[in-house]
Image (cartoon, rainbow, N blue to C red; front, side, top):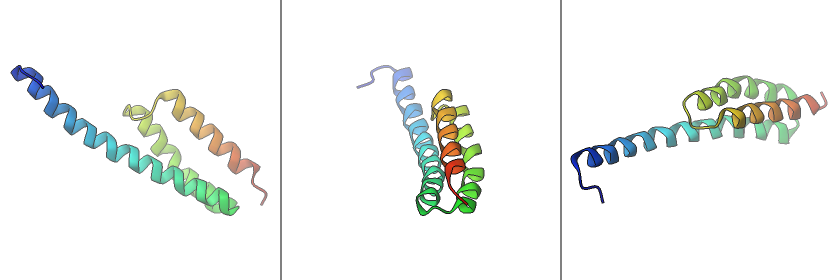
Length: 88
């Protein structure tokens, strides 16, 4: 348990930041899931549209520190490659 005044404030700040990060991570996963579902359905045009919306969200997640830079780049590259491989 935090003892000092500054430590107590730090705990409050961390709690606020955690909530924000949780919301960001959830939003990011939703966008990625939409792309995954379109790929699974084999719908290339829907997958491309979903990817177009998801790509900036993934990049934003990396900028905001919710996702590592390289992890974001890897995720974008792999989704892009899977969409490219879809026939249609």
